Image (cartoon, rainbow, N blue to C red):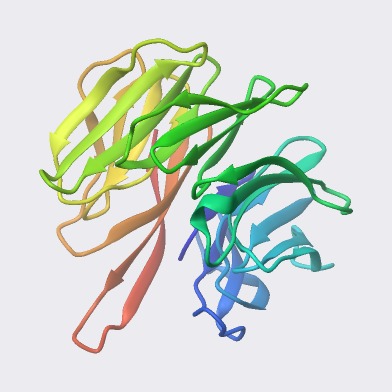
Length: 287
């Protein structure tokens, strides 16, 4: 299982296919109450980030931005690109996504496209490896190499909100703050920091020795984040002790994370044996 998104009743996730192998990649749905996954769309070339609204599913493959109805019908390619597409997010009218040329990571773009289709509009160019996207309070946020950027959607130029973070791995925002995770390879330290959206001094919420960098999201009073062996944690946004919501003794690693009003959901995987068989799961725990 790969990227994950949720709506009121279902969990949507991608099933990995190898680059160039259009036979194995899938878009799947499973009920929040459990059960067997249903394949909605197949034959996708390495499906990546996924997002849903009340009518449709949107996802990126290696070089395409795709759309389908929630039941998997009416599959439409919205964008065919020569660049590598990575993240996707939505507001009421538009799809936002990132694109990076295959040979020039410092020539990336952040783009938007009406949900109904049309010509993409470039919101920011000359970006160094643009990655995680987030929308909050009328602004679009994204990560670049060692930076977090902000763009007011009502108009204005992109501006660097956070800089000098060479070990940046993921980012999330709420109505008050931006949160980001770093992992320093030289001393195996995982850190989660917080800063007001208006700017200011970063505050460290988590700092600990860890052999793995995970992912994070924010909802309500907590930052939810993962690390190795399927450890899922929550840390108060105001600071305080971290609580462990899930951990495993086997070699499962979380891949993506989503939250609703009652639960936290994540996808994970494990390389199970010497033949490199892969086991993938969709997991849930109370918030």
